Image (cartoon, rainbow, N blue to C red; front, side):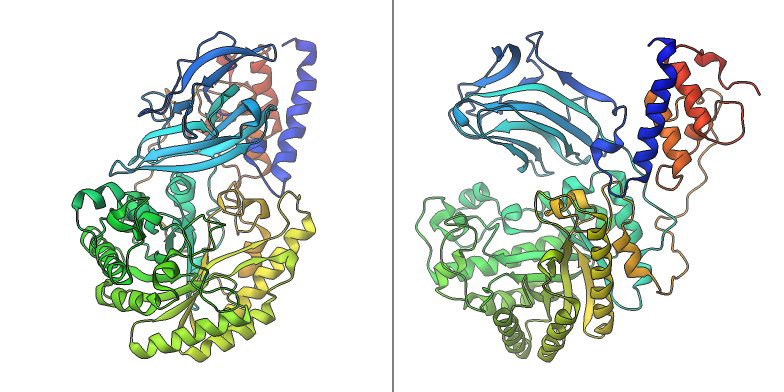
Length: 630
């Protein structure tokens, strides 16, 4: 870099970093100014595609370098099945680390309008593979996917990012994986679970990948005293088809908790109670569970066989959690989920995915919702001691569904098998329904059933998919959350838990609508502030057992200018300094990083330190001369 341009570069860096610090909603692309450490990057112009493999088994994909549109790209050809395709292993030794978030970017293109899906795969502690779709590119033109988030925990293996879709060739260019931005949570704000302790539990839902970063763990420990596993206790995560078939018992399905182990271990180690979700559901329950010999193409079983399977499945799940996690407080469990239409009728019979996910294989076997009382009967028989049992549903404010839920609750309460109703509370603020006063009215009606109520999956989107929210949208969200929590507090004698469906906006199943309390950088949104405003703030409780103070940095630890501790002095360190100077809570520097950042010879960390670091990066000052003398 030429010396005459250094002031222009510094000014640009200053303005970019200050704008970043002030932004109300932060994205991964925004915060990774200067980029995290690049793990792998290739434009394939050298013809080397050896970092990729096909997906094993009978994957026929042939990987090669091919010239497309004047550029050399990775070509995945010879594919005979949709899942065939190129894969990049993340947990290869020396490549990516557990507990760190990574960002994946690439250009992709399908031949003959082939759609291409970028996905993530890992094997759980039991060796069972799991798959998560990250993004889909459509058509035969080049599409760019940028900063797709992936992370993994120490107890999983065989972690890949891969490309799939159709059976024609897939082309990939400009593939990159880099470390994502590293955030710290705000420790100086009140804990939600402490503020609401006089009223009800405050919970969150999370998944294995979502919980992997340390910051997510810290957020959960600080604010929540209930965890719901987003997917890992659902039937498709627990049921083991191959083992069911090998067992040879047509009525005793084999299950495994391996997929849930990461989150259950975390709950156990941090003494956080767990809300189980879910035993009997039309969705995320494989069709083969309802077929003879547990075969995909088998005949549908009889009601008698299905009742035996249901009982044994529920028995096996509860036996497993009692034996493997005796120290975890499973305080609640959704026994049946979403069995009613908005009109209060049973779902249409059918298999999962046939004409949409609304059809129910349970109804196909039983003809109606007569399976529900059996599910609660079996759950009561085998549930862990103290575990309360719930029927759970969405659009609970719909008149027909509300009445059906109340009638069911009264009936099963009288039989001694149901303890409460789960109210999902998935809300969309632009639709203006439900409003808080309407939800208040619904809760009053629900209370007539005489059972416990739990808000189980709360979120509130602020815009339609594809739209950019305004500051006004966030203000409306803050008011909506305040109004709803005020209603919940009014009904505190009936409500025992309020659970938010996710941790941060970017990990929400409805991330396009910014529906949760925390931004993707873990900072609290205005809706968080609104629901604690005016409430009594208790003395903060420690989120971790006290530990000895960390050792002070030694002279060998200090490398002046290296504010982000990556062993180099460059523009990313200047950005880290500017962010710290703008907002110490949001962008903390601690220990050695704090010492390294103070380089201008003046006391305190300011923009002047960032300028000195930029001068080192431009070779105008030697790093060995840091810190400057006064």
